[in-house]
Image (cartoon, rainbow, N blue to C red):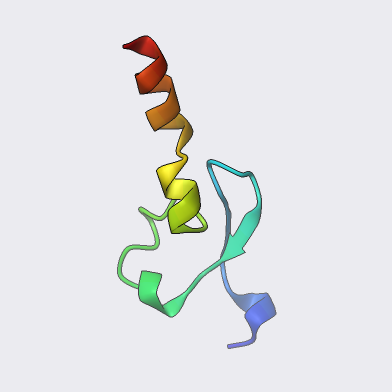
Length: 52
């Protein structure tokens, strides 16, 4: 399969598009972030910290 044919999602944190990776083959539906860095800076965590 060509790289241009791989599925694409948009990162919830940074808003940038990212493509499917083999390590995400089993959990592609649950993937929401393009990287660990974005996962750590998740807007969901930021919102919950502000409420406290």
